[in-house]
Length: 147
Image (cartoon, rainbow, N blue to C red; front, side):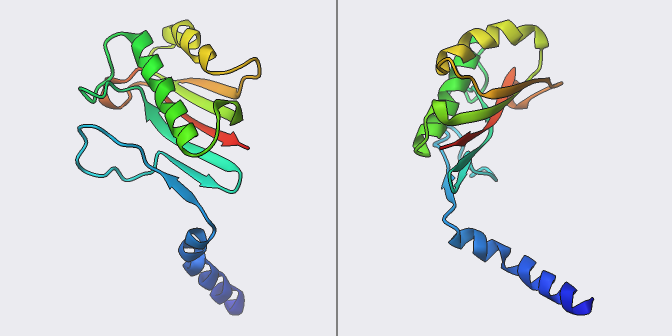
């Protein structure tokens, strides 16, 4: 039993080095107005899979969500698309999306913008109510794309 624990401890200790050698690609977008690096990547590619971090639709001039909800949804989807394409994927590669929303009454407004970013084959999706989101946002998206 002690031998197994020592082997397991050795494997756990080598995980960071294994991740670095595995060819993960870390995507970090420019963030106008933010001078301190944030403690996460916008996306990570591992193998044929892209993991998209939580993304907000912020006005680049203010760093806040715009007052107009439809404009926020547009900025959000543009930001997701930019990240996906920067990683070498397309929006058609997106297979799963989770949307967090501070007001579920905005469902139809969001969908009106969201639909325009995909063809007829839509990703699996969850639309989840959230009490508040950072920077006054109404929406936050995270997702997965696969080539």
